[in-house]
Image (tube, rainbow over all chains, first blue to last red; front, side, top):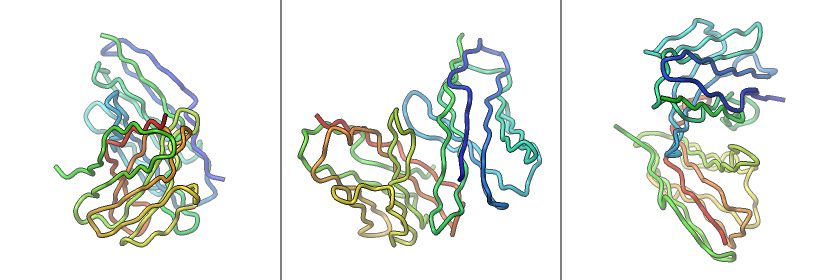
Length: 116
Length: 114
């Protein structure tokens, strides 16, 4: 069965520190997609990145970077030089190819608190 | 900046009342999803539409929940009758594609059933 594990429930850092959020997934599918979403205190879910299973290149977007390793079934997210505005819950998700449903299977989220 | 919109943003109601939540997907998107978020269960899919046709509502309590898309610009989620255990944040998301497309989420409707 498909599953996403975010073992870190809460992380607290001081501004300007780098922080890595871990995501480990399980799937039997050979083709799948992985996502990261951010949920700030205001509550909305903000899309950050989508990565397919055939593209293992790391991606960098400003202070954000993602490390996808199929060998360890991990899709980790690093924020460089964290800022208070980065404080949010971050969700990793896996697309489910079973049946006709494009269902996202979410992890339980990691609450990141960036202290000034 | 195209966004998914949801109304109402907050709803407080009493047990037994009907609740209707509305969602306007991003113009041009052909898939709509309804999710529910609770502390205990996290984010779970309730219903999924593609080209206005319901493809999956297996996550939805059939006896009291219903989801429809009267037209391409409106999706609705109804609860009748509502119960305290329905208290949650309900998110609508939309996307474009035939599968595994990115889902863009609305701001959510925070429902409290007393």
